[in-house]
Amino acid sequence: MRNQGELPNWRWEALRTTLWFLPAVLIVIGTLIFIVTFKIDVAAYYHQIQLPSWLRSGSSQTGPREVLIAIAAAIITVVGVVFSITILALTLASQQFGPRMMRNFVRDVGNQVTLGVFVATFVYSVLALGSITIYPHSNFVPHLSITVAEALLLVDVVVLVYFIDHIANSIQLPEVIAGIARDLESAIDTEFPIVALVDVTSWTTKQDSFDHQPTAELLRIIDERGGVVLATESGYLQFVGYAQVAKIAKLVDAVIRLDYRPGHFIVAGRPVARVFPQGAAQQVEKALAKAHVTGPHRTLMQDPVFAIDQLVEIAIRALSPAVNDTFTALTCLDWLSSGLNRISGRDFSERVYRDDEGRVRLIGADWSYPKMVNRAFDKIRQAARGMPAVMMRILDSLIAVAEATNSEAQRDVLLRQGEMVLNSARESVTDQNDLEDISSHFIRLSDYVIHRNSPSTFSPL
Image 1 (cartoon, rainbow, N blue to C red):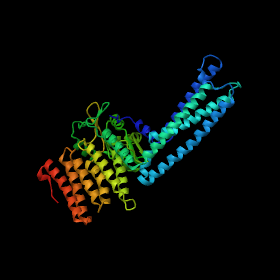
Image 2: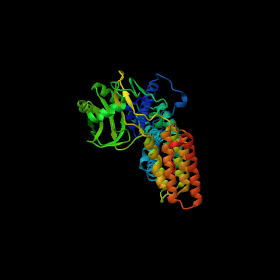
Image 3: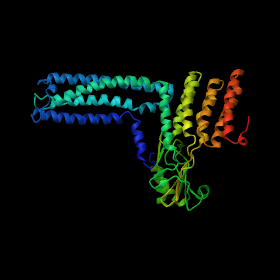
Image 4: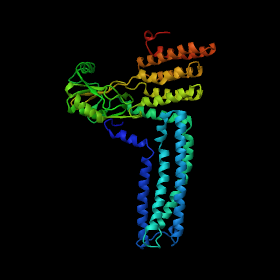
């Protein structure tokens, strides 16, 4: 499981979501390869080593120079084409899938590698061409460097074919939706591990106490007698170094309760945490500014709800009158049910971090299963008024998710969502047969919940 105390994780995620980092790395690698091949060519020129005969391309500089010029010109032209295709794909993604989906295309490793390979080949070819021009001996020909440039050209052809196939597949809606669903599953496994106990060096999330006081009592003390910690910067909370914050609390001998979790929008000058005792508030505020990372947008780091929102956005766009693509909405519902199925039954208890002496130092903002379920279905249900096919799929999804739950409270949340679907159907569906089909799907859901729960907890419509 990911170490939640490693603050540099967010920096790595920020680098991944760029079109320059990986190409820059490949350019450096290409430069290093040229340095190696050039030194070998120089050694071969002075007869210090013997190159294979098939590497030789004559003693004249004219032919090799023209070859390298042709390679460099062709590659830079293709780079322009690749960049144009990438921009076109980003534009289509923004228009069809929503602006939040652009980051998924930018962070796509295939696009980054393609751009990097072509640019690295161009840089290598230019360096090899320069070695012919600037080397003092008029009869020097970098045989190995030219051969490597030609080999890189063949690699570029393969990469170009891959890129065309990759970009054609990546802009297809089913592939986009499946990719977001994979991100959702990965974020769920990271934030809600199957094993509820999280060990971060000497920090754990056990529900222990500070000076042997119950967590509820400790929260009451913090609310009544704690000091307020204000946000220093506005933006979406992208990353929280929980272990780092807990160590800060130990350093000032305090307890910190966070009011926000990654994905929330915080406003500068507004409370983001409370600390007990009050005297430590000023120190904690300065330290917390370094442990909290904010930005202009949400990320998937520590925020699986963001992936849910992305799927919901695609679904409600598909259900809009301008698009009217019911099958895309159904696909989103299938993947949403898969994600909620994965998260149901996981531990949603508060994140309570204690130090190696058993004293509670940090209480993180808790996750809410009802809010996650409502986040997944509310907007789709509202957009699907008068659409029996979507309503029935929502109910089927709720049944699938209910089978993975392990508590009455979670099943009651799903049943409540089903009740709202049925009420919406009664108000918006005019065909009696369609209404009966929706009712039969709801009966299956309610019967399953009644079977798993105590009958006394069920309230009929």
